[in-house]
Image 1 (cartoon, rainbow, N blue to C red):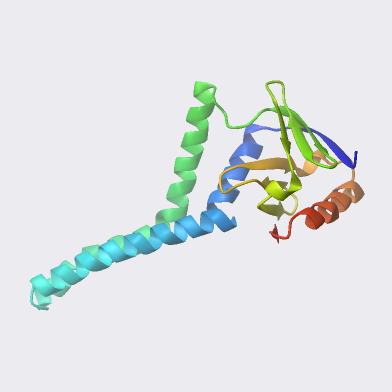
Image 2: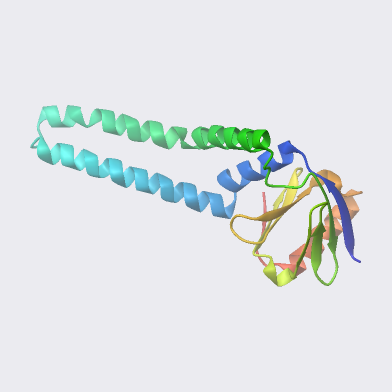
Length: 180
């Protein structure tokens, strides 16, 4: 066995993963960019319709000011809005008892990698890894697809040498490694 980690995840680790996924990851950035572009196009069409409908008069130009302010407010507030929604979602998941992670697990990396929890055991080939995200000082995320990742908190490593060895090892298994 090359590596074995006993992981005790917290709600904070799970929230950090979701914030990272939404705001900084390859996947989340694409979604937020698409969302921003969609809203800009919708509001842009409304602005053009108002201008054309008003014959490009002074009243028409004054009428689009609220749309322009709404667009600016949206562009500035989209990240804080999504962060608040994410925190509320995690809080509701916790309240309902349906968290998206297991508090305790054991991950082993050998010919394949496995995650064993109290409920189940998952075995994956390294070829299933789509991307690895290393958030320095916090976590390593091993993405299996655009929604699922295994979380290795920084504190699960016994030493800096072990962490560095693991990072070098995982880089040999996946060519898409991002460091944040």
